[in-house]
Image (cartoon, rainbow, N blue to C red; front, side, top):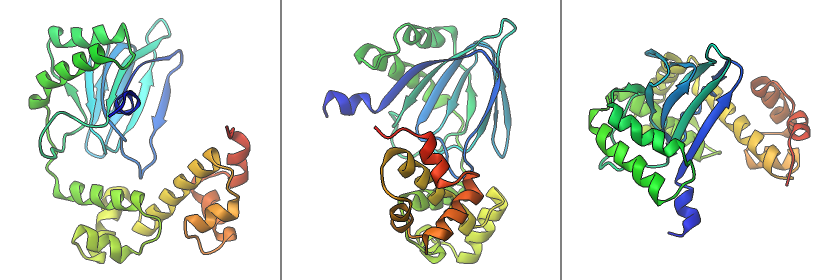
Length: 254
């Protein structure tokens, strides 16, 4: 593994804002990395389908990879919001534990490791070492989610994100459930049908292609297996609330 590959496994940042804001994530997109944060000033609120977490200055939180959530960020009395965010593609654990989004109960000594990282947010041996020391102290205490339905839903959405051309039967077979059970699972947990979620995911992929490539709209439509470019435009407008041309106009192709 070269230095670039190593650095890409982590992201350490200080986030600032002078205004309160809500950051809704797409319904079909869970957290792409494991994320540890500490509120340095201001407040935050996290919402999942099962719980609401309210965080204050000094609180440490953990967001597991794949977690579906929305967040609200509130400035402090002096008008500032600041938090440290540490993201990692993988965790130093064996097996495949499914953690929950949670406030981490840790000591001041544990927190001091995070504060030290906040002084130098570059990805290097020292900061990664501090991060892994922190993880080693808290991973065994983290709460885990053992919901079978959540695991199946995660598996289904991962399949849908990884493929563009498939039928609902393919997803059901991949998850070892019936198509009827698949529809029930999606309606109960996402209040969407699998077909609706499929269209949303394809439109999200289309946004990325529009922003990062010079492919024509017709080419993108073909790549994502839409039946026609006109149907692609109609579906895109429905779920993104903008036309493909508007998205491209707002983006800069390097």
